[in-house]
Length: 102
Image (tube, rainbow, N blue to C red):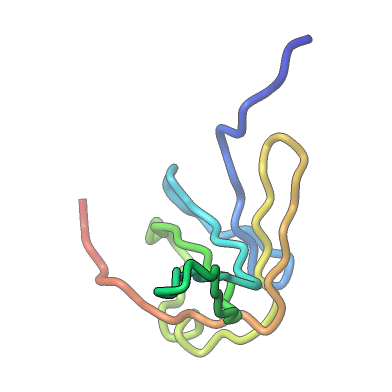
């Protein structure tokens, strides 16, 4: 049985696709456990919630509004070419890179 490996993704803001370069990534977030051993050989762990994170490099094309992207707060989608989709509700741009030409 042949399986397709994810090769392309589309990052979307409120349903509209962003023009991005290959290499986008997704950290789904959620519950993270960190374990430790005590001197009495007990397995102890703590839990914390980690935020979802999508990273991508945008291509600056006609119509790209960096100011609007900086102010964005809404639904961010991560759609793969293998049919899986992930949604981050109430997403924002945590980091804005630099505008580079070339």
